[in-house]
Length: 208
Length: 208
Image (cartoon, rainbow over all chains, first blue to last red; front, top):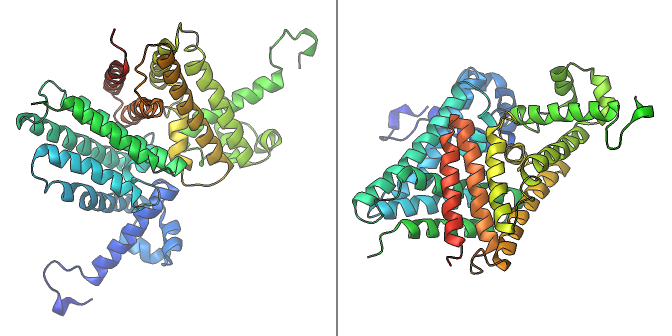
């Protein structure tokens, strides 16, 4: 610990170590599946003792939940935060969709989008882990719908469009780009998704 | 065996039993994941001896591959075959998309579409199992694109549409309906997907 000279907001070594463990865990989860994540498996993967990891997390479920929270922080930093600085709701929406595609193609997680992968893995497994993934997905979709509604209020998107419907369609393109990219390793998946997103937004845009 | 009175195309008891095992295996795979499928786990699930199942399949990978082939047969019988009887390529395409949504919502597989679930499970795991899943998905997408091209030749869809692009967009709606339905159990997912598919086909339709 380096508590005597700790500048504001700098994490302690313990917190940094915990963060590094959870980032490795989130990457591993996109390969092995969130359900495949275990304290023993992660300990072996990062070369740490199993007892050391138990001291950090206590149970497999706590490790899974902490991993989800870390993946959400990474997602927000990669996709959401850079987009919300754009000038208006429509620009924010467009930036967020594009940042998602960059996030997948960047290899940040070897198994593509953590949340797409996790949703497929846990959607038939009731429990806290599934609830947290479903909550993240619902918030993401609601965030897209909210930006659409704000872009309608700003006069940039047709108020006749149903925000929930358009958010579903835009999100479908992101998820499918992820699937096609992972199965075929084709960056063409991103071209197809970008074209589809442009067409969907063109349909919804108010033509002056 | 009942070989003395075997009507044409009726399966032998052995073949029926193998088919029943593989159907149970395909259903289980949509819950446990295709990777989670094992001869021991399946034996316990269906109340059969592990040695009996080994005699049928020999290895976990052979069981996985045979399960994929059975899931493909079920998919073809549920989704493809009833649709190809429609009058023309556009009607066949429309019927196939609708049959997919019915296939998911019917609970035929407890974890939704076998191939969506399997793709997410194996897309980072190189090997024969992943190749077979990717091959099925590629053939499905190519089949959609082929019907689109035929509908263009028949004068029902705008020849200016790129069949690969439109197939990607339509398939995205199907996959997303599956995801949203499994996570939230909302049949609204199907309403959203149906509306999106109608709009995509309306955009592509030649307006006389």
